[in-house]
Image (tube, rainbow, N blue to C red; front, side, top):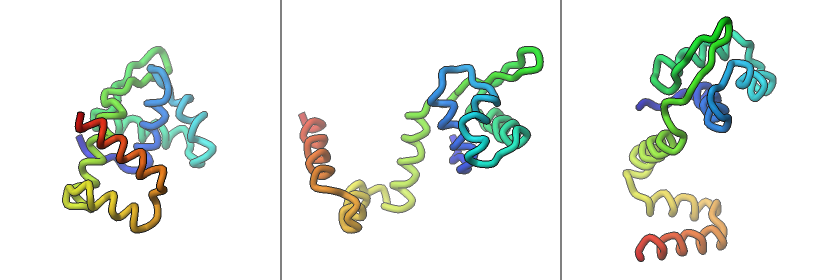
Length: 122
């Protein structure tokens, strides 16, 4: 698995939130206006995702349909692992400490994190 460029990740987020199969029209309705993408751009990005092994495609008449081959959770696990290795030397403590020192964690977040740790220990 390889890291996706932001534009392809945006498409995959739409694919993952919709029941397969997904069409170019589905993507255009979700992202086309927001991103100011033309249909040709979306088709090109989706074909790249097919080439990268993230989607499979079938042709039905003039319309192509797309099916996810990589699950959202598997990709997020891959990306998160890369992020921890690259920016925090694989240290969860470093990651949490950075968030805490920048005041991005609330007391409620810390309480939730402590509860999560307690549940994993049992």
